[in-house]
Image 1 (cartoon, helix red, strand yellow):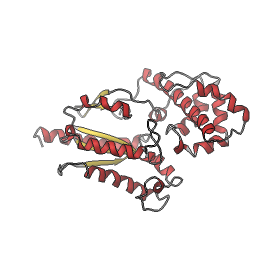
Image 2 (cartoon, helix red, strand yellow):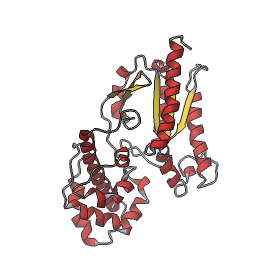
Image 3 (tube, one colour):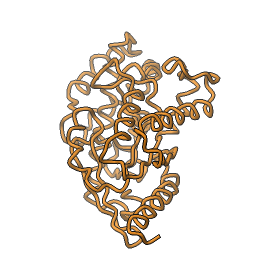
Image 4 (cartoon, helix red, strand yellow):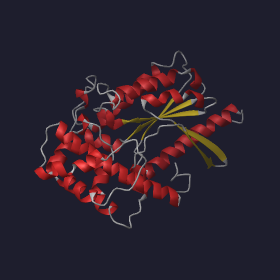
Length: 308
């Protein structure tokens, strides 16, 4: 949104995201090194197993983003170039790893340079956990859009209710690529099943009976990369399509949420679901989707004011 209608990022924002890029690289390297031990995957260089421990033990997910010590970069590059680390990466559904891990670990040679400045693509791929309610206001076609971002983690959901008075539209973001992954908070719980359950709960909330519901099935690029290697039917037995068939898998995921919507309406047959398949890192795709969403929201405002 900041790129599409906010005029881009200010200097202080770019400096902040530079630190976030560093933290995402740190987290990705620490996650892979830890998982290699957990999964019993030996390092090609035995010495690296010991040397990388400083990188692992110094990572703190709750700390504010800071620049990495320069001596960490050679270690991280050695780790990522290890074929055994690539083997571990291919098993990423078995442990918690940032979606952008591969992108940022490939970017280390550029990021470690003293004059590095995050690109637009770097910024849109960063991951900053939302642990509070964040409100942003954007002026679009002479109309102020008030967008409230809420944390998706289980512990954050209790903070949402106070934000829901007079909401015009609910934008629900679900990841397509998490069908084979588990929650960080509950290792036995499938992420897509959790997302679907939350989606159904929101559809049934009385606060949203007059709100338009817009569903983004996001991370299509990662989904398309993963489907040929990770059979959807292994995690969702109801899927009867061909293993590795991206279009059939995508159709199944869409139907999963569409059925969830239909089964949660509580008799409100006049409600509609607006569904979009997105790749948030593709700004051209997001610009097009935003135009569709903007039209939906503005039409609803006009209708409610009896101006249509």
